[in-house]
Image 1 (cartoon, rainbow, N blue to C red):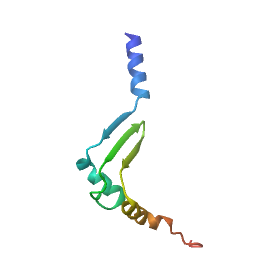
Image 2: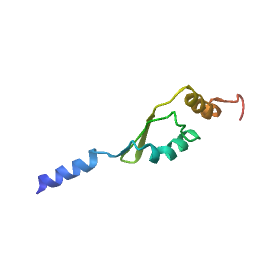
Image 3: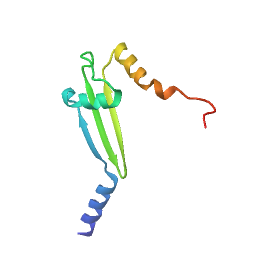
Image 4: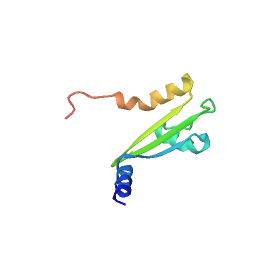
Length: 88
């Protein structure tokens, strides 16, 4: 019995909780949350994986894209590249 409890505790401690989806229709909202626009029809596949470890989560997203989609994603992140010097 002690061995079973030990195995159960180790399993719960070291294994993460994971969620994975490849359903494009369900992932449109996640894509929009990440990049600020709905994926165009040229984005055929979207895959999402969320993993939870102890007190933090990891979020992976992969998708097919063309040059226009990539340009929109980069444009969405442009404000992050702007820094003002001596602004205290």
